Every structure is written in structure tokens, then in C-alpha cells.
Amino acid sequence: MLIDTHAHVNFRAFNHDFDEVIKRSLGEDVWMINVGSKYETSKKAVEIAGKYSKGVYATIGLHPIHAEDEQFDPKKYKELALSGNKGDENKKLEKVVAIGEIGLDYFKNYGEFKDKQKRIFLQQLDLARELDLPVIIHCRMAHQNLYEILKLKIKSQKLKINGVIHCFTGDWEQAKKYLNLGFYLGINGIMYKFDLKEVIKKAPLEKILLETDCPYLGKEERNEPVFVRQIAKEIARIKNISFNEVAQITTQNAQTFFAI
Image (cartoon, rainbow, N blue to C red; front, side):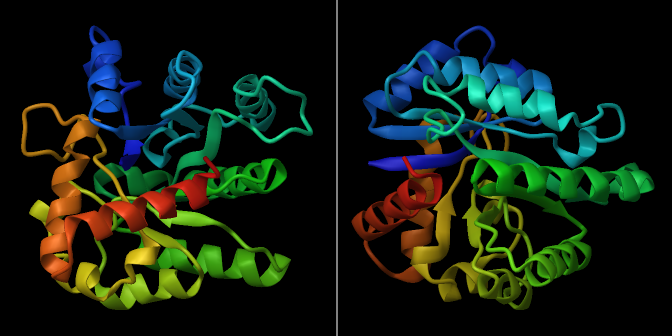
């Protein structure tokens, strides 16, 4: 069994066949976490997850690149999170398993609204704390700012933030900083574009989560959750360990992280 901890089957690329894609994945014993990037895609992720008894989960969040044109309404997102739970507010959420993807993105013109990104990021960290959910963090060209915010938040409020740095692209020194904060590293097909061998080799397998980020970052024209197997095989090759060990430990990581 494998778990794709960062999929976007809730995105437009899968509008016409997401049921087939999901059935194909579950048939290959691959579970998935469909990640929201704004209210619309978060809502769709929750709706899709509600169709399956197991193996398909959702996260809700406002991606930093959408911070320019969408306001973050904590009450609205909280209601969406709770809609994924068949019980009451005091019961553990069953389908919405994280807040994300959230974070900072200074690529190209996105850096022009850094202050708004930071403000929304902090609001979403607070929502995650309120709902007792982990966070999925997107970071592009903003590692120093992101690390400083997380470190300050953890230190000043004496918080334990359970999070993963999705699609990690930093170097080993940056990776160590996040690992020291207790974070996981999300590894996906970005490894085919960036040299992450040192990070993958040195990072404890117990702190790695497998991702596809589908429909993006695959070798195929459209990436899918089933192709998370390729990521597991490449990690096994780099670490010189068996595929089964990678599958077993990263699956345990995901089940622990998302409480599934």
C-alpha cells in the first residue's frame, strides 16, 4: 500500500474522469489526499472524499498564489472542514485531514503581495490549531521567511505545529532546519528537475511523505496518484533500500500524520 499525500484530483484536469482515476488508484492499493488550493477546490475535495468509505481524503486551504484575489474567511473554511465530518464539532474530523496547501510563494510577481500572503498564512495556522489538524505548507523562493515565521510561532506561543513542507526543493541545510522543528518533507516528481539526492539520502525515511502533486510534476502528460509508485522506487534507489521498506514506512508516516 502507498499513500499519495498531495494530489489534486479535485482540479479541472480531472473534471471528466476523476471517478475513474480514483478507482484506478484504489485498485492499485494507492490512497490519496486531495489538497485544496482555494475555497472552490477545497469544497470539491471534500465532496469527492465524501463519496468513498476509505482511501480518499481532503484538505482545505488558500494557496499563497491565490491570496491576491481571494480573501480568507476563517469561519467559512471552518464550516467547510466540519462539513466533512458526520459527527459534531467535538468529534475528530473524518474526511478533512489537514489545512493546506498554505504558505508563501515569492516566485515572479507573487512576491508583490508578500504581506497579504503572510497574514493569510498566519490565519490558517491559527485555524489548524483550532481544529487540531496538521498543515501542508507550500514554499517557493521563500524558505528564510517561512522558517522565521514558523520558528517564531512555535517559540512565542509554545506551539507544536505538525506540518509537512510540500514539494521540498531546498538544500540539506534548509531541510535540517525544518526537520529540527519536527516537520516532514514532501518528496515528489520535482526531484526530476532539482537535484535532491543529498536531501533524500540524508533525511530520515520516518520524516518523508510521498507525493505526486498530480496533475503536475509527472513524467506523463497528466500525472495521477498511481504514479506515486515511481517516487517510492526512486527514493529506494537513492537510499539503497528496498521498495517495500519505503512503501511500509512512508505509509505509516502518512497514517500517523493525517490520523487516517
